[in-house]
Image 1 (tube, rainbow, N blue to C red):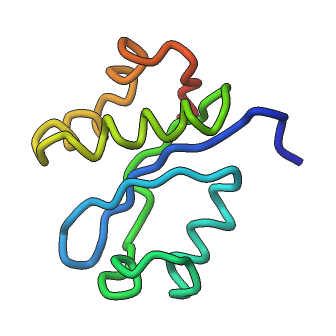
Image 2 (tube, rainbow, N blue to C red):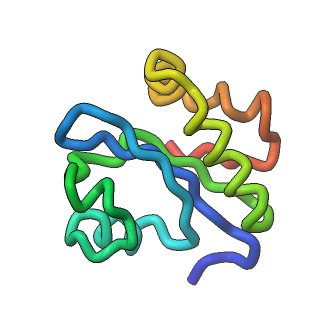
Length: 101
């Protein structure tokens, strides 16, 4: 059972070597949806995810998770790769993130 006000922001690495960023309340369920093609995400139906490249637990509301998701989506690929390798970078901008390593 997830704690109230708990969201996940995640980056998937897809089979076309691109990154897909999203948010959810249940990371395991959402990843399975992406794998099965049952998620309401046309991108991952076309380009299947290979793995969860990185994820962050967000203690806050949906708006906070969406703000973090948008922040990551606006990054260029090199910035996303740095973020994947060093997930703590994101806490400089968003202190409500809990790093789950």
